[in-house]
Each structure stands twice: as structure tokens, then as C-alpha cells.
Length: 180
Image (cartoon, rainbow, N blue to C red; front, side):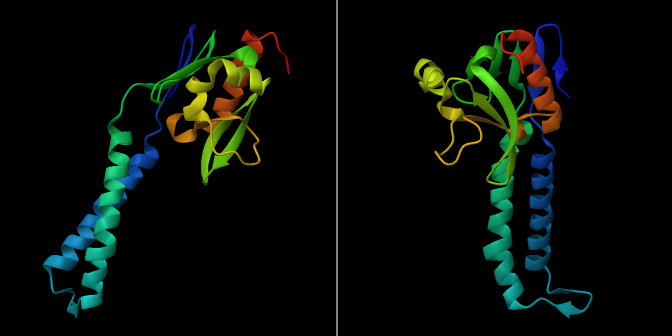
């Protein structure tokens, strides 16, 4: 759950996807263990093809799932802070922000490589990029047809994206001179 206070809103990582991937990795490890240590199950012998697939497909996939998600599952601390000054993204190296509310035109839901994101549409793109170009680099994606200029990963937010977008839009309208 996001922490709400007079200062603003503090978002943390959504860890459900990481826990699910780690669970799937352990299920694959169990499958590989059974296939490699036994001759068969219930009187049905394992084929050499199944053993080969377990070694060359299931085992590397399980290791990749585990290594790719264990850092996300054990990481602690806030990821995004929305305060009176603007939005600060803390999960990037170095942290990005604050992106002032007056520089933001709107927030839109996006999908980047199939993953949900919060898109930040800037009002004056050239001006904002000229001021904060090096700071904003971790949030800029490949130059394609853009619905948003900056993207905040949905897995870094512990609330559903429609709720996050609604809360951020309310804060933008409250603390910016710009109204919808």
C-alpha cells in the first residue's frame, strides 16, 4: 500500500510478480530434480529427451527466473515519491527528480514491451529536457511514436495503475497552476 501523508504519497515496489516468478523457478527446480534423480514416476519411465529438456531448457530457465527476480523481491524502500514539489523517482540510478508539477501536462496508462507503465506527458518537452536532460535519461525510452515522454514502470508501484494515475493527476491539479 502507498503511504499517504500531508507531505505527499510514497509508493513502494509491487512484489507479487517477483514472488510468482520465484515460485515458478522453484517449481522448475523441483521438476528438474525429480527428472534427474528418478527413473520414472508411477511405473512410466522418463525418456532421454525429457532428461535433455530438463537439463538444457528447464534448468537454465529456472536459474534465469530466480536471478532476474530475487533482487526485486528483496529490495526495500520507496520507489516513487509524489510531494508538493513534484514527482521524484528513486528506483533509478541516480534518482530522478523532482519533476515539477508545472512541467507535467498529464499522466496516461501505457504498455511498454507488454508491461504496464505510467506515462508522463510533458508540457514543454524541449525546455524540460534542456534543463534536466541528464537526470531524465533513465525514464526516456526509445524514440518511437510517443504517447508519453517519460515512463515510470508499473512494477515499481504498489497500487493499481488507474489508482496511481488518478492520485497523481489530483496532486498535479492541486499543486500546479495548470488546471485540466
